[in-house]
Amino acid sequence: MTVPTITLNDGLQIPQFGLGVWQVSTDDIEPAVGKALEVGYRHIDTAAMYGNEEGVGRAIAQSGIARDELWVTTKLNNNAHGFEESQQALKDSLGKLGLDHVDLYLIHWPLPARNDYVDTWKGLVELQKQGLTRSIGVSNFQPDHLDAIIAATGVTPSVNQVEIHPTFTQTALVAKHQELGVHTEAWSPLGQAEDLRNETVTQLADKLGKTPAQVILRWHLQKGYIVFPKSVTPSRIEENFQIFDFELTGDDVAAIDALDEGNRIGPDPDQFN
Ligand code: NAD
Image (tube, rainbow, N blue to C red):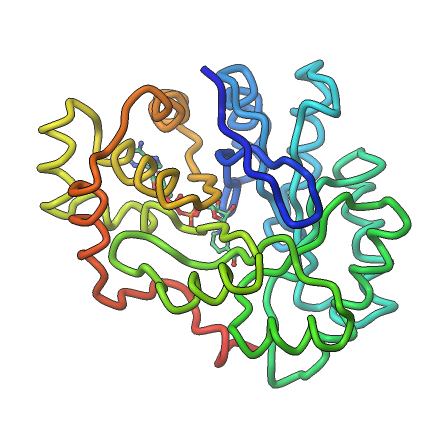
């Protein structure tokens, strides 16, 4: 089973599908990442904030998979905003991961009231120049935050990782990404499992002989989003990977598009500081 790749605005190819490890404990992290790599996942989405970079690194080392076959994303923690702070923050993450570079480094949250995300972005531009990260992007940035960092540096982030799932589709933000050439990464792609119970989703799953999770993840793929559902359950890690051998029709995609009800689960980035 081959995972499709997406070509980012810096020319790098990112696997469109991976494993997310938010809220994965120290005990669970190595077996979960190990299982995913065994199944065929080649993209892991972690963050300094998740406190599990060491376990991700150990699982990668134990897998024996060549470094250039893997895509590792980590994120700058909210307490490390600022140009100087960002330089040390990525070095700390690399030490924990046991890697000499990551593939993608993101500013985790813009924290607009602190008004230092532009300086932080300049820090990421420098880290990319030094080769400590191949690609740089942001997370939870609103349109005005994207405009501000691009205006200040001339460097467009490769991705913006934002909350998107069937009941929270963020179409205006996605349109802004398309206008700027920023790829959309969809966090909480299953709506933290809430959207799996949606009746339209369960009916589509019955019709297609797939599970609700597979239907939602397939919708993300066909929308062009990069996704990394979280699970520590081996059977679900396998189930979530079985999405490359079927397709939703245009009507199926439209039926899921219509489920948006503004159901934001996480914090509002404009208010989060
Ligand atoms: P998710 O939408 O991936 O849902 C995870 C939940 O769904 C878990 O409780 C899991 O047990 C359940 N689940 C997974 N597969 C299932 C299946 N096949 N059947 C039934 N239940 C299943 O939620 P998430 O973890 O919030 O998001 C995924 C990843 O996105 C995170 O792990 C993290 O990497 C990233 N993320 C980023 C941010 C950010 O601010 N940048 C915020 C949240 C999440």
